[in-house]
Structure formats: structure tokens, C-alpha cells
Amino acid sequence: MDQLIFPPFTNRNNRLFLENHDLCELCSIHGTPLLVTSEKRLRGNYRRIHDAFSSLYSHFGIRYAIKSNSNPAVISILRDEGSGMDVSSINELNIARYCGVSVDKILFSPNNASRDELMEALKIGAAINFDDIGQMNVLRGKHPETASFRINLNIEKGEFPGTTTAGPNAKFGMPESYAAEAYEKAREIGVRKFGIHVMIGSNVLSPDHFGHVSREIFNAAGRISQKTGIKFDFIDLGGGFGVPYRPGDKELDIDNVASSVIDNLEKASTQYGLGKPELLIEPGRYISADTTALLGKVTNIKKYTKTFVGTDIGMNILLRTPLYGSYHHMVLANDLSRALSGTKEIVGQICENTDRIAKEREFPEAKIDDIIAVFTSGSYVSSMSSTYNGRARAKEILLSDGRVDVVRERDEFEDFVRNTKIPDRLLNKSKK
Image (cartoon, rainbow, N blue to C red; front, side):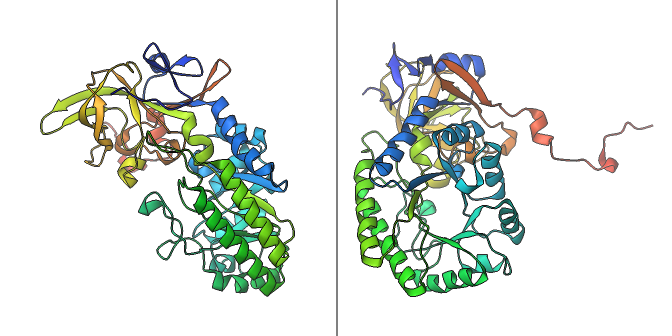
């Protein structure tokens, strides 16, 4: 069986290319592990999802989920496209501002934030999406001009248990039955503009689910509005827009999703008199995931009870697989003609037995110094990486119209000790 590749990557003479660049040549120049991103694909993904909704409903906006990929180059490209930002911490909020995103296009959606964090967001002037009324009460009577609450509709949907963001076991949001009290208290302390927020799920590929959840949150907004007299300035559906990770996965029909969502919004607006609130979504993965390949080198091969293919891609670089059991498709970038040949364990250099980027994967016979390309690595790879075991995080480069720009350097030794300090009494001093 042949090695399958995903768009926008191409096969040229059995080598993997992206935007007319030989990825193996990039590895020889920049080393591995290496994350390579296509700016053209990033912009195209943004425009596809934006156009699907905005063509049907003019009062629409995107708040890109920075947690999926927080590289300032990525954020700056999306700011250039007109995107706002969904941020979950003060550092993410400040990254967005550093990249020139206007504060009125930033929604701060923290989870269990401290009073200091909330006060800092208040000082900056960001809209705050409270996880529950208790988080608003932490501000002790102070308030943002614009606030929303995250509603847990008790509709579970996630690719893995760890990424399920709603339902009785989720730590996010509050039931609708508590929402009216929260909004009335917000109005009482001085909030003047209101939103409502829901988390649809994670990596959802079923258009029907978006139709179901959007109908429920629009109806919830209508009931809350009628009960409290509050008019919603925006309704935020969150993210969850999925992408294919496995060969054979069907792409999310984003036009179908947009059509059903807008139809549900218009019906609820008519039924409850919601007017024309701004419709917001928070895609992260949908925009950035398939723009990027993670490239690593084969460093060792062991054949005992199983065949272990050792690489310099460890769980410090790609955490999703050890953490969730997620699947990332991968190929030999330097020889796409090499046939699949039995199952392998593709493992990294970290001193943990969970350090596996693929388990029992049909894969070609690998050789030392082969280059492995891991697809769909533009989301939750760099942003979840670490320096565990003293291993450096990946270097990152951006390809655009023939240009190759380094957008994150690989960690050097100085980066490992930059924020540490040895007390004077412990400094190594020569004995007299």
C-alpha cells in the first residue's frame, strides 16, 4: 500500500513538498524537529469559514482560538485577515495585543481565573466571558462594559474524554437554569453589553451536531432574554469545527454547517424577538491544523518484541498522542514510494513509556536519518510543547510566496536557565 499524503502537501519525485519547497531540504538547513507552515493555506482556511457564514449573515465575526497556535506570526496573519481573538489567559490576551489586535475584537474566556487576572483584563478593557457567576463575583462589584456567560447545555461531544467540553462531567460553564440570575446580577453591577457563549465540542465533523447545539443555545438565549429583559449583543458558538486527521475522514461541510446555524438563528430571532445579535465563532483547529507538518529524524531502530522506530519527535513536541491517544497521519518525507511494511511503534526520546507518537501503525521500513512528516500539526502541537527532559521545542518556519521565514527559533541552553537563579551560597566556588 502506498503512503498517503494530505493537502496542501504534494508528492514530487517521491519527496514531500509544501508551497514548492522540498521539506527534506528545509530539514537539512534548519534541523529537526521542525514545524513548517503554509501561509497560503492558513489564509485560505480562514476565508473559507468566514465566507461560509458571512455570505448568509452579515453581522458575523471570528475570534480565532489562540490556544490552538499562539505563534505571533500566525496571529498577525489572521489579524491581517480581519479576525478577532479568543483568549484564555492574560498572556494570550497580551500576545493578541502585541500582534496589533484591537481590544474590542478580543474575548477573554478564562477558566477559574484569579482576581488579579480578571482585574487585569478589566484594566485592559477586554470583554469577559465568565465561566459562571462565581467568577464574576470574584471582581467584587467591579465589571467590564461587555460580559457574557458560558452555558453548559449538557450536550456532550468530544473526540476524546479529555476534550469533551460540555455535559455533566465537564468543568466548563453553568446550566441554563442559573443563567437568568447571573445576567440580572451583571446588569445590576453595571454591565451594559451582553453576550452568551457555548462550547460545541472538540474536532466535530458532523454538521448535524452544529445544527443541534446552535438551535439549543439560540433558544436558551431567547428564554433568558424574555425572562430578564436583556438584549444580547452577541451569541458566541465557540469552536469545535473539526478537520480530518485520518485517511478516509470526511471533511466538515462548512457550508452546510453555516446554513443550518443561520437558519436556526433566524428562527429563534423571530420566535423570541432577539433582533440581530452579532454571531461569533471561535475556530482554532479548523484554521491552523492542516497548514503545518511536523518533521523529525529517525534516530534509532529496535526490533525485539515489537519494532520501535526512534525519532527526535518526543512527547515534549507532540503531546496530543500520549495525552489523548490521538491519531496523526505520518509518512516518510524523503521516500514516499517506500511501501508500508508491518506495524511499528513510532517513539521519541523522552524517558516515559507513553512517549509514542504512533502505536501499532502500518509504516514503511525506516532507516536512520529518514525524515518523518507528521500531518495536521498546526494546532495543539507548538502551543502544548515543553522542554521536558531538557529537550528543545521545535523550530518553526513559515512559507509564503517563495519566502522562508523563521518564526520561532529552537530553544538554546540559555533558554532552559533564563528564568532561574542559583543562590550565591550554592554557586560553585573553587576551594582555597
